Image 1: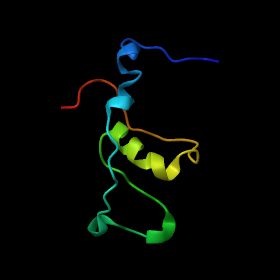
Image 2: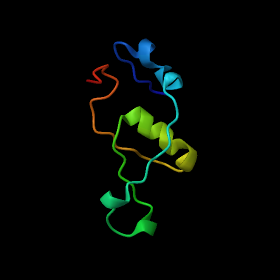
Image 3: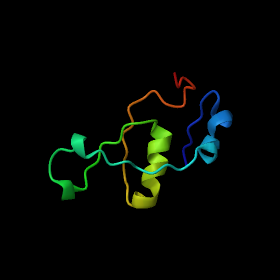
Length: 76
């Protein structure tokens, strides 16, 4: 099976274990369209957002597009 390798991978490979779970916060005044559509826009750090979605969508997602850059260490 192919693997992805990059400089610094060893440093971040288990970083997700250190990031706490957070709850998604609904913001009704920013909603658009049919509330029952199941569509979401999640704003925030990608790892925090993905961990917040995990309880709802584990095993159901085939593809996620995350606007890079990520895992750069530049959270500022």
